[in-house]
Length: 233
Image (cartoon, rainbow, N blue to C red; front, side, top):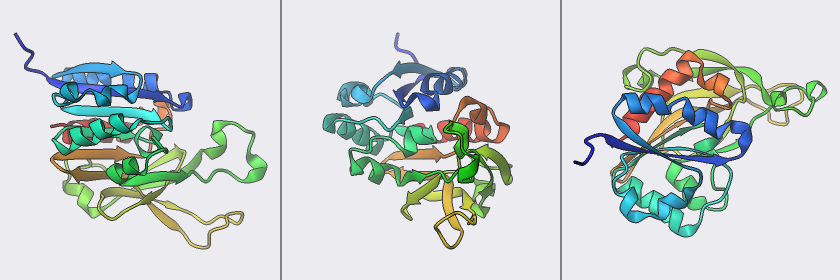
């Protein structure tokens, strides 16, 4: 007898610094607890399996950088256009597959940089890029199921500067300050949490989530958990 559960596909890998295994393992029990059968793949090759992808309700992707083949991307995009949800956080979705601009077109926003500490304070570690900043929820966030009840909150982690189009529906932003050593001349506002409608599918992106400890922040974790369910078919 076929399972009545929904199907979630977790695609993880890429740069190890974003802890793709540990990060996705944090949310797999949540998905199972909400009635999903979960399959885990370590590369985007599965996207090229058209028959399998047609039955996937939700893709959770954590694949920083890496590359994707043409048939794999076409399979991903077709699945989303046909109603499969696509969700993720940080570089696992907003800095994936730099070898194809079509992926950027699908997601709607691309990581550009994460301005770090003063050059004199840097030691060559990931923490060079950890800065205090605020995630500012927008008025639209108050009524959205992903962000309802969540106010502005502070983090100390990578602050993503994101290049985006205006087809994304932004729920929260973050503001890049101008420090005395920065080359830009005014503050820059980047989307921090957004959604996107693509064909029959829904896309959810949360840029905070550099490592597991950030994903365990109460606000970040709640937003991602809600975002996964929201994006799902």
